[in-house]
Image (cartoon, rainbow, N blue to C red):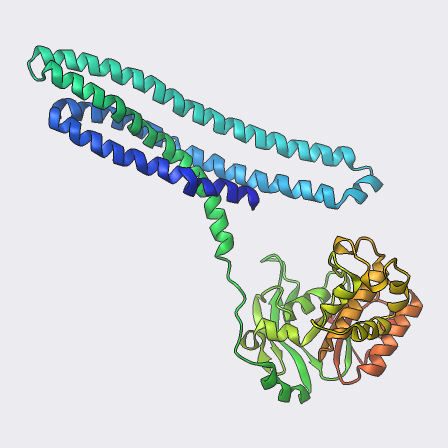
Length: 430
């Protein structure tokens, strides 16, 4: 994105001006040349127009190579980021040479495309220099012939030549800068496609309006919902299922059958391909995604923690929460003891993503954050998979005893977690 912005900014910074200015200058010089001698001026304009046509024939190849460079740059950035983020895996599985070769190959491809772009620009410059010389020779030849016939005076010829020198320079700039402008427009088009992506639409339903519906039996309903990350590879196919109010439901099924995807669809992270999802009898789009998420506390399989203190990470569940509320939530998530062992306790700064903590510690902080939110619906996606048996039991007991009036949907593989649920739904059989 940064690379695209840098390239596209050239349109506003210089490219557009470089194209417009020669057009204005050419118009001014033509008026002066036509007033001196129409015939000579038309011949020179015809010669320059032929060169412009040749220049513009390079416009299409320049645009194509610009599109290829854009795609290659995106691939190069992706590989570079994967090398940085997967450094541990590269070391563990001796992938250094393989990843190095992969990165060098994409750089070689990018270098080859830049070389082709350089060749096209060189051809463009060659046409300019060669045609500039040819036009000068042509001008002298035509001028001598016309003077012999008495069609033009020496003074007029000299004046036109002085004007033509500047006219020719600006005219050639049109043919040079239009292909370069189009190349920049490729990057601009990519940026505008991103900016034109449809944003989430907020509904008009308020939380107060939804509160009377909390007593309904069915909290979440799927009606003929189909979804796939790839168009021809559905994960959920025409699924209809209900999640009852005030009970814990366990979603089970084989790996890849769409358990985590199901929760993400409810949260609006992806749009369904067909069908509809209802929350307390209202369509999610009608309620509005902000209101939907306010009613749900979500603990993902791989919780993300920010580069701030442990207390602040937990407090995101309820902005403005007091220290006592944060500690109570941490105790409920069986996180208080390990937090107090940290150098600065709750004020300990966590590294980006939570890399300074173990997987189980990250999960407990994420669970504390969800407990602090105190939402009527709780999603837990393998939220206790990295915990020891004692911590898992403590959290399960807390959810079962304290949150009897809340709707809890869990995804888990451990029998000890699944057996706590009042209802089990196996979505691989649907």
